[in-house]
Amino acid sequence: MLSDLTGKFEAASKAYATANGVERDPDWFLLKLQEEMGELTQAWNRLTGRGRAKGRTSAEMKQDLADETADLLGHILLFAHHNGIDLAPSVERKWLFRP
Figure 1 (spheres, rainbow, N blue to C red):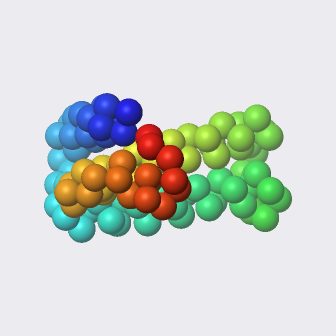
Figure 2: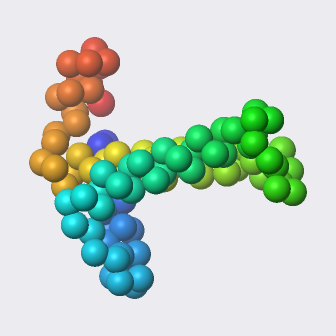
């Protein structure tokens, strides 16, 4: 399951990088994680009234939260893939189930 997801995120990320002239060097993967965590935090703050809504409806803010969560998931998988980390054994060891 994780390898299938990783492959799909990798293909999408590579296509995006190629289309936009983005160099995905080793630092980029960690920096994107940080960027996406910031965007998820911002979406959470807006949704929970800790940040300005900027004209967004509650439904739009919930969608933003879901979208940013998906971005973070994708970038976690990309980070692991590009650093040779096999997440399945770690999930099994840390979360006590087999993905």
